[in-house]
Length: 564
Image 1 (cartoon, rainbow, N blue to C red):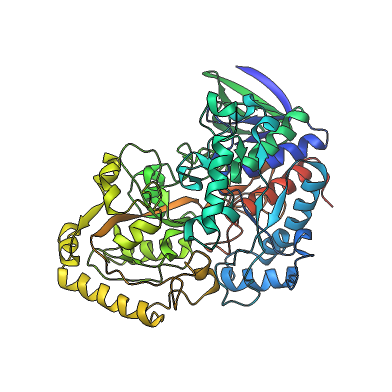
Image 2: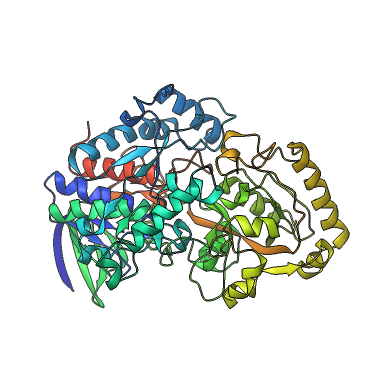
């Protein structure tokens, strides 16, 4: 077997992994990035690319807004409790702002804070905006066609019609038809179609946004620093020597095993195990297809299992970043419901036709509720997303465009096969297999709440986060409107995710710990390959990539002896 020597081996090429690679290379390391897929970017590239970081330098000049590390700690502590050591929470809150500032000073990474509320604004220390930051767009011509061609595309749900890129700031008014949305839509379409001569050569948008923008910027910095990217090179195993140090890994490259000896360290950032059906069943208690996940199809837990094989400790293996989702035949991933649940004129019901949660709460809260109730024997997997003709004419539902009933004949067969349609609520109930009287009562009760603006059952539309994706035209509650105009529709909803939360236990520098809570020299884990610093909770948009980048930054610096 051939041996290749390097200073740092990074396994995976998502936001955290590429941050680690760029930082280590910037400190003078020779770096190899081993990526399992033929494309780089991982789940981060397909996502919104946002980071959730309290108290950053970018928030200082926002009128009327203030934040602090103590506010961030109060909020995280109220959510996480004692599930994660205080030292780990503090390490994130203290170092995430430092990471962001350092990356902005030394790399092309650029973010901006947006007025996106924390997911639990009723808790102490929560903020109603600006802790979520989104990547700034970048042009394809700056990135280069070779890099763009090797970048994993954005998830279809994170673009307009699956082909036109948008930012988080643009998606909100377009989805909810806020004032000025028509002009924004026109500008967006014109910008895309008038991008000549690119438009004559390929469909992919030349304006790169969201997770694709983050990974494009990181790849340029990696190239500039001489980082070597190995595609189609999955991790096979780790080597631990007689002194207990992990100094090498076996990587399959071009179909042959290669031993990569890493003098300074190996950083595992290869995602979770959500696409491994056996691990899903064993740890999550869900014997469901990997397609229920909205993440990278190659996230099968390779790095986690390699760490376990050499004595690493694991935690939170029963947890995931949950999200209700819908999926269609022939597609390799689900469509997580990030926005639609808050839109007025829609509800989610269980298999009996009953509501069981505040649909407008965070997708993680909704998904967690589905899973917890299903574990108790309640018929929440699958559930059903119910809406009427008015909703269908006004709002998109993933690939289901707002064409109204007249446009149903234009829908692809894969959508027609799963979407139910009836001229009455009773008829819809029979199609989804529940008692018509139960669904009729559910709709009647909800419609009463929509008229008064007060959801007496689940308080939908009261929290600041609920209202973010509401429609201001719906009065008196932006998240409520009657389901009253036939025909009526139902789409099956599954317990999906955007990744698993459980993985290798790490310390404040990202060092992997053994079963005795001792650091394993030479081995680091970040992102969904590690047990989440957020525990089983989800504080706000960007709480996955924020820690991945922060602990990637810390791990690279620690391996290179540069941490303060």
